[in-house]
Length: 88
Image 1 (cartoon, rainbow, N blue to C red):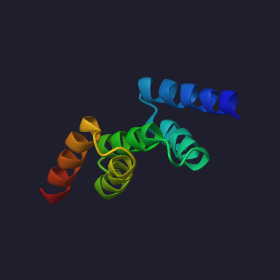
Image 2 (cartoon, one colour):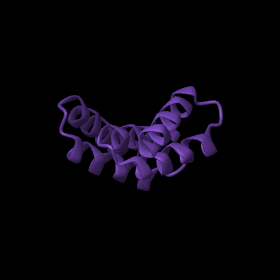
Image 3 (cartoon, one colour):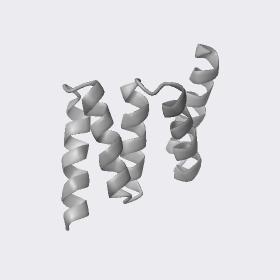
Image 4 (cartoon, rainbow, N blue to C red):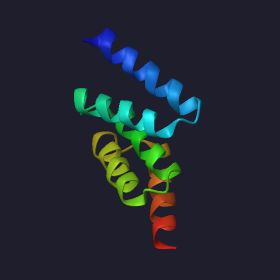
């Protein structure tokens, strides 16, 4: 249901803005389960994993973004950063 999904997106964004990253991750994971072909949910997960230094998880989610949307420049930059940080 779109309104339910919008509510979860709002909550996830709210938690991320408040730097409550575990709660934000839980909500963005739920969004990705409900809308697996939505690149934005995977992008948000990838960025949060990167912020939490969970590089392998970040790389996995950002690769999903690029599989769904090969032109996503933010995902490309974040993926490069995640790989570089993981390898350092």
